[in-house]
Structure formats: structure tokens, C-alpha cells
Length: 285
Image (cartoon, rainbow, N blue to C red; front, side, top):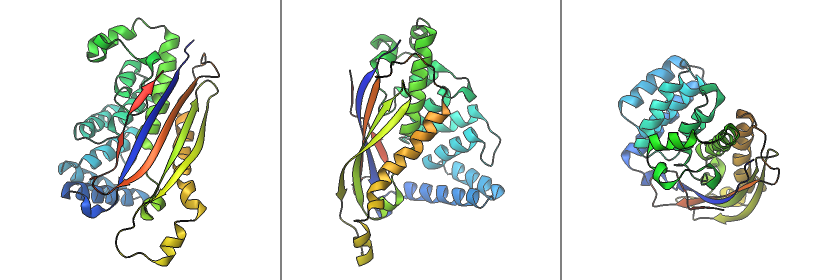
């Protein structure tokens, strides 16, 4: 049996204004919005045409979206190897959630799973610093040694670590800053408590913050900042992804009920940042 106790801190930083972003990021974000708009309108031909255009311009954001479209078969034929290739391109272009998307995909039974690849990429994501699913230092930087190390593990340990990697990577890769909170320059903390032996994910709201609103601000916007739905948005964003993550991966069994993985998500505005990022000052027991 595996017993894990870990804590981690995730920082989700939102660009406060598109005007501060560089041209590539603005153009990439606009390209993604256009592709998503076509998908929502069920116009797959236009979505694919716009996808090809964005890929031709080498926008990192479009690489990430292309990976998602091919992974889930959205307007294109489902193709995990091709999806993974786009995710790798996004990762190489410094898209923060790309490594998590790769780890989550490799851990998914629909794609194998490939436990070694899932754990290799999970180690590059926020929140996954579990000693029980790690490898010796000499193997951690060498893919061949890493695979050889995992071949010495019992099947039960491999199954449990693959499950943990999949759930945590899905959380890291898919949690987004709530649009209402972003529009009203609000930040906040939410602590996620993952009990994989149950399995269950609990959320606890922490402090909230108000940042300076840039430009012309209406009295309605200032009033709406105090509405409960604004503060609830951070929990709702995490809850939606948590439910999807738990449903995505079959539970392996054999995890003690008191096993706990705790992650603190901090949503904050940074006017100097170019785009949304997730950093990972982490510690594990």
C-alpha cells in the first residue's frame, strides 16, 4: 500500500490587461478565441481552417488548443500521438499547462495508459512532488534510467501513482482564472484537499483580494465586486475540474483512506505578467 502526505502551493497569475501583453500573446489569444467561437457555433470547417492558420503562425496558445482538439476529437479525428506532439510544441514554447496536459493524457486509460511517461511529465507540473511516486536523483534526469527504475516497482504502486498523476495533472492543466473575477480585478485563495483513498476532493475558500481596476469603472462594477458569486467563482472553477478529474481515471484501490494531498491555489493579478502562468513552490513529506 502507498501512503502519501504532501502539501504544495500553486500560484495562478492573470495578466491584468491585454494591453500589457506582447503582440504574439495578443494575436495567439485572439486566434484561440476565434477557433473556439467556430467550435461553439458548430462550424468545424472554419474552426479547422483557423486552427491551421494559427499553427502556421506558431502561436503557443494555438499549439495547446490543437492538442486538446486532437486529444478529445473536437472537429478533428481523435489522435493522441498527434495531440501529444502539439502539447510538446506548446511546452517548448513555455505554455505553462502543456506539461500537465501531457501527463494527464498519458495517465488516461484511453491512451494506454503509459505510466512511465505520465510520471515523467507529471514531475514537471505544479503540485506533483510526491516522494512515494518519485525516482532516485540519478534516474530523475535520465529517461532510460527513469523507465528502468519504474520496472522495479510493484504493479500496485504503478497503478496508484498513475492515478495520482492523472488527477493532479488534470487539475494543474485545466484550472482557469474565473472570467467574472478577472473582469472585476478580484483575487483569492482556495485550498484543495485530495483524499485519493476515498476518493474525494474538498475545497476550502481562503482570503479574497481586490486589485485596482484599470480604466473607466462603473458604479455597478464596484458594487458587483462585493457579490457572493464573485468569491464563489474560484471554488466553482476548481470544483468543475475536480469532478472531471475524478471521473476520468478509474480508482486503483489500495490507497489508505487517510492519505491526503493538499494544494493551495492562489489566484492573483499581476500587471507586469504577459500571460497566465502557474508556478510551483512545492514541498512534500
